[in-house]
Image 1: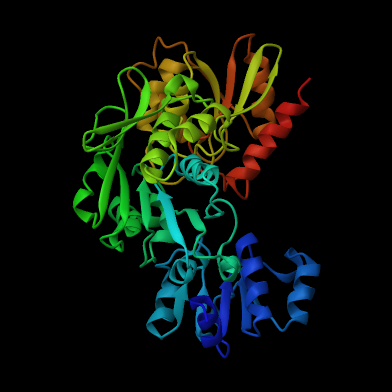
Image 2: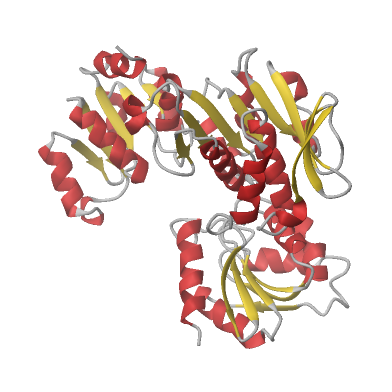
Length: 464
């Protein structure tokens, strides 16, 4: 009997609550119901806001519902609670339930407990989705059966009984997922740690410690990959229990991936240097993508042939919403960079192109300062189009930059995405680049950053 089978048998008589019914929990609830487990859906939405077919299907299978304003009250009558990453682990209601003996867990946390195969996982403030995808593609190129999950791909816990020991699981993990995890992957990577999500975590210390859970529970046979160039991750060396590999675009580490002076991406294994691919052969633009390749090389060193990495570099066109080329119209190129929900991601987009951009920004406030991107915007943006909750805060930061006067930067405020795209079209000239690079989360106007990016793409594709 597998560990997963033992788990499901052990909780057959338990009452299990699921906070929120997103894509991952929908599949998970179906699996739990198929095992005959008593399930309760807790969601702040009212019943008329759900797909009626979904409600009907779950009810027919014996599922209970706790909906609306007091949806969390039912947690205290349950044995196990699966929270979504969007439900803060240290929420007072969850904390109270935990102190009363209720098990508080999550899909990803339980998956790591039960997964029978080797695990690779990445976290970081920026770059983790592209890097996670690259690790997955690298391993696929060697014939591995790869299960991609976490913040990318699909929920893996519903599939755990179908995963064999010879497979690999590759996961992207956010601070919201990691904050409660007490099991780390076999191969862990941290791309960087920069101020983000402080509106939820409150302090940089809590945010950083949440990220550190990806390292803190590894064993001596594990591997950890850290940025040599990022000040915070560089300081995590002493937390690593197993093999430590660095990645760097500035230095040649004793053990790790690095960018050689001639532009070649290499790996140095304590004096033995292996060449992989030249940076000019990487299809997706920007030095941040060079860093992503170096991270993925460090995470899969010894398992993936250099020629396979080089082939992927020449062919891989990037991940949706990450400086994603949308179309060229009248000599103007439009890029969807909706993932760029922090100032550091804005800096990466500014560095990805040699020319000034027309940039659309603004969204919901994550409590992060916009000052670090203000001066670079004055240098590398010709028209800044602002919308959303943070429009005035971004304007104030940019106008306070020492190089704002004399920069020629024009700042325009609009009411929504449709007006932003129309305004960009109006000001764009042949040869220009327009990017949606918001610097903010999307929740003031959109459910998720993906919805924001797809709306932008739709509007751009409708231009004539």
